[in-house]
Length: 120
Ligand code: FES
Image (cartoon, rainbow, N blue to C red; front, side):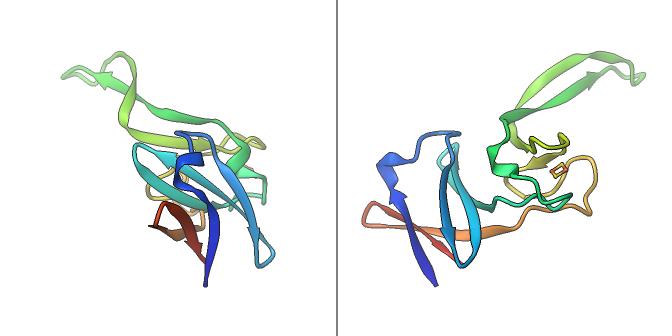
């Protein structure tokens, strides 16, 4: 069933909008023109994951001997960081970057006539 989230013009980059539907809190966030709807319930210990920071994933450059050349922020990978224990989740896939057993619960979204809806 589809639930209205907000007008498309109201959703700002990396600024989640929250809705409650069917007993769940869902954070809806815009990342590089992609809309992600995520249950605000961390798979680790049920923390409010959508209230955490949203940041580019930090990667390390290595030379041919696997020695560090320093860190950089990935342009393509964006993580959500749970505020309770700091686990990071790749927003696109929902998978925890440290432990793939933990995965965010995501929902389909659709934009129709300038309005965003989430399917639950
Ligand atoms: S509850 Fe989210 S990292 Fe522990």
